[in-house]
Length: 87
Image (tube, rainbow, N blue to C red; front, side):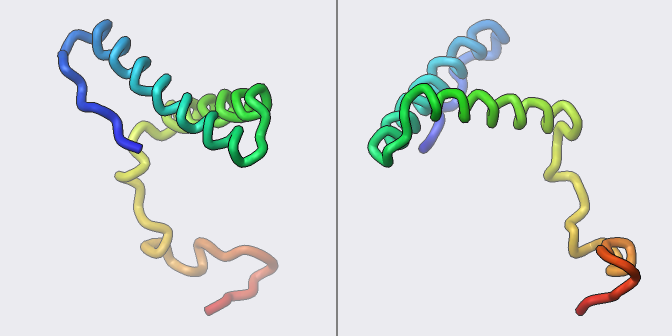
């Protein structure tokens, strides 16, 4: 799935373009979900929930690509459990 690049710098027009592109993408996703056996209402509700999750995550961390890699953290700092260290 690809999105067309924006054609304008106007925020209102960009919003309309993004909405149309997202609608087209969602129609394709819903059709694929229907073919796989999911109902339109249930997949639409799931997509809304997923979109809200993504929106909330973006508000908390607008650019997660700038976050350090998990492998960059010292092992002891990332430890889980009761003091055990795993290789």
